[in-house]
Image 1 (tube, helix red, strand yellow):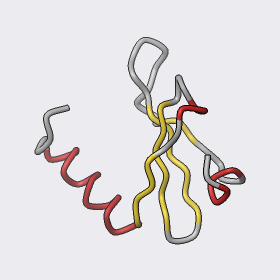
Image 2 (cartoon, one colour):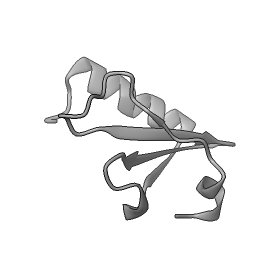
Image 3 (tube, helix red, strand yellow):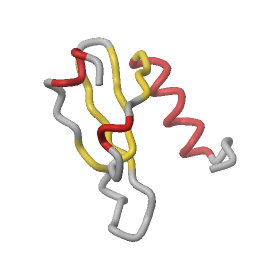
Length: 66
């Protein structure tokens, strides 16, 4: 894990439950990190805040094959 996220506070999606694939999100200055809640040591993706907002908008709109 990168140093910037080592001190970050990771939170699980409120829509997650034990039977589904879940993600966790952490915000640090200027960047948002996403990781698999079932494998937190497996790494993370980092997005600028604007890019993360765009990703959320596309997910909510159903534009991505998830």
